Amino acid sequence: MKKIFILIYFITFYKSVSAQTFTLASKDLGGQFTNEFVAGNFGCNGKNLSPELHWSNPPAGTKSYAVTMYDPDAPTGSGFWHWVVINIPSATLQLSQGAGNADLKRLPAGSQHGQNDTGAQGYQGPCPDGVTPHRYLITVYALNTETLPAPSNATAALAGFLLNKASIAKASLIVYCKK
Image (cartoon, rainbow, N blue to C red; front, side, top):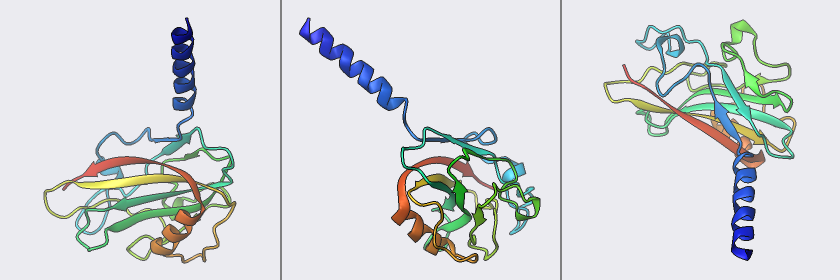
């Protein structure tokens, strides 16, 4: 009887813990970028629209969020940052399609674009070189501060440093793209 009680306890505990996992998902992205979300420059002819992203089960103590998109396979020696958004309010659990496009003004109030590795603010869609698919790591960070102390022209490297200092949890998607 004692073994059954212990088994039931662990099953219940496991389900309650696993139900609380901080997760990131997208209605727009499967395992591969479609042309709608691919860059419209650097030799690619996509629409350069940022994808919809939504997250759930943020940890207790979350005061804001940040979102990044990074290509570790870019032939730069240090990867390539495609998108940085900081200071997303804690009540926000989604970025709508096009939120990364600065001209569409779809970011939640108070949120701020950081610089991507082209030097521009906002979303830069993928446009990998060659025929080998690149991995794109899209991450949402739950932060312990309402605002990061970053200037309006913060580089991805500076934003990443500040994010890692303030992060209490993160959730990621890996999406692939090839020419």
